[in-house]
Length: 173
Picture (cartoon, rainbow, N blue to C red):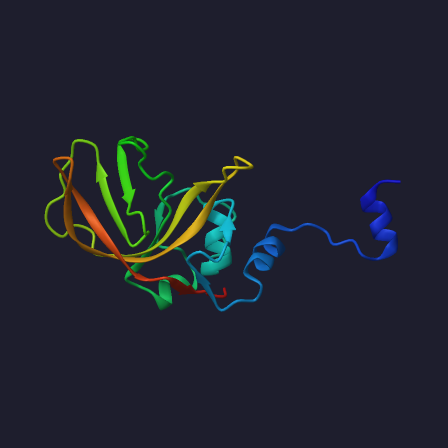
């Protein structure tokens, strides 16, 4: 007899559900915090668990999630950079560089200088990180960031964001 059948008969089998997994990760918390160890396999998982969006699929890295997020935080967006630049190499020409302490992000595109204000949205940021042991990639909360001008790095101007909060409230749909 297989383990699932044995556990069903014993009455202690709990069927897997992605929604239940995300709820378990948040343990009924009211907010998510930088460094609390919570991670999400996909952008959709993070949007559903933290923003109450009710997505079945979502692949855009820069979005204004539907549901309570849009109502409560109309000037905010969610940002899921797929890769932070390592050794000057980003993804699809994008070079998103996070400071060693995680308090600042410089966003740029290879060969383009950012000047002026540009995007003025406050960003709730989840970065894609690879677990060095399992090799699995997931999204982890980095904080809430606001634009704060530009910064020159290696002769190129990058859009600069500074962290203004290390937590964000979990919104229920």
